[in-house]
Length: 211
Image (tube, rainbow, N blue to C red; front, side):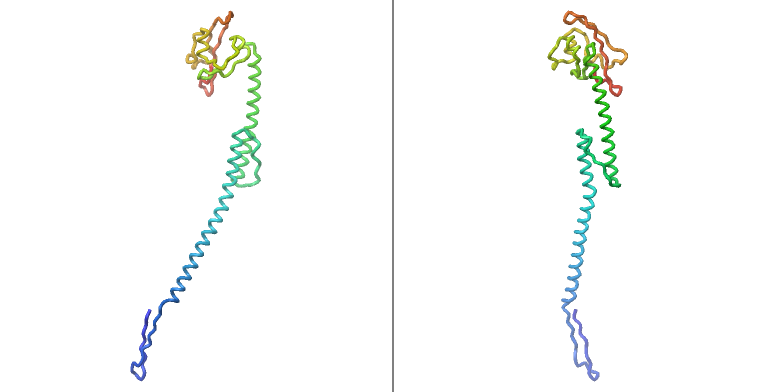
């Protein structure tokens, strides 16, 4: 940034004024402005990060806590979800989970009560009762049935092998499409006694689940 100006004395150019600027001041100002802009930018990024982290914590922490409570709920701990006083989405979700846990707990209590009743009836009925799943594995046998077939060890008892052993002439594959009101009947001689066998399908969602 050099500049020269002629100076006249009595109509003649006697001097030349020469101005030379190294731009040091302009460069210094520009540098200072850039430093200020960078500092402001870094500060804005830092503030944004802190605010974003705090905001994310207000969302993620309740969700993490709710997830842990849901895991406890899945494990059978129905009392782990405390009520939330928050009126936001997370608070309402928490209270919905709590209501669901209470409803599920009541349903489980009803199911367990019914299961206990059925087991008590089966265990004390005078007819022998056995239940098998679709693989032929034994699900249930009451004391009367165990007495009738004269077995103390039942861990190896499977449908096809047992009824083949007593000459019942039936396999589990023959019974998968039985109607509930049309049981299959067999009569066999076992341990000096005549046993009348009645086979009925166990259904779930209109599909065979066992015998």
